[in-house]
Amino acid sequence: MALTRWPRGFHGLVPVTLLVVVVMVLITSFLILSSDNRWGFEDTPATATRMRDCYRGLQKEYYKQVPRDTSPEAENFRRKAWRLTAAVVRALDKLHVLHWLGSGSLLGFARQCDIVPVMGDVDIEIAVESLWKQNITVDHLLKTIRAEGPRLKLLFGRPEDSLEMTLVDDSGTKLDLFFSYPDANGTRFTNGMDSGTLERYKWPYPDFELCWSLLDGLRIGIPCEPNHYLRIAYGPDWASPPQKKWDYRTGRFNVVRNGYWPEEMRNEVFQTFEV
Image: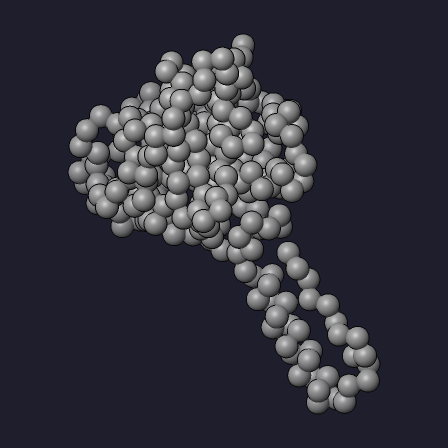
């Protein structure tokens, strides 16, 4: 974040001009400090100033059609998923890595204001610029996450252009960490792959401003306009109950089939770890 500097020769200004300059500097500083600073390191979700709630009206309408699952199994999943998410968020905040709810977790939060058990896991995206600009390696990132409890189970792709990882807690609850990459045309993209066929998938979406919200009291990043992200990913009916079985790789509206990894690269682009 750029800081406003006083002009040289400031002491020589007449009182009226001095007052004008002071007011202009204060206004400029306020605007800078209160802006979203889209990919700046000081506006991580832990310190960002703009708060964005979920869509409470949609929540009411959705649960009229599909009642909230309050079974013991569902509530147990919510508790474990929340603890896992909180642990990963603590690690990312320690490193000042920009992060936000993505994919199905953003859909469930925006539409139902909730962690949704039927999703089966949690999805978080992180901005790779936060790693690159601070020279944070994948090993350093994983070490910081591990110190909070979660462990690495699966690693997909490569750090430079296509990384995704699956983290788990002691119970096996999963969190998918997608690395979000900037593209030359002003968009961003995340990646996935089929570990069997090695087919690659890419999900592009427009860049966005980062806000924060509360997920059952946990401060976490979300796009300032979640509906824009969700309309691109899930189509115009994203707020309605799903009408078919969902395939997270190919079901998204913005999916781009991105070729195949060569078989000789399998051990590099798909790794499993003992947990």
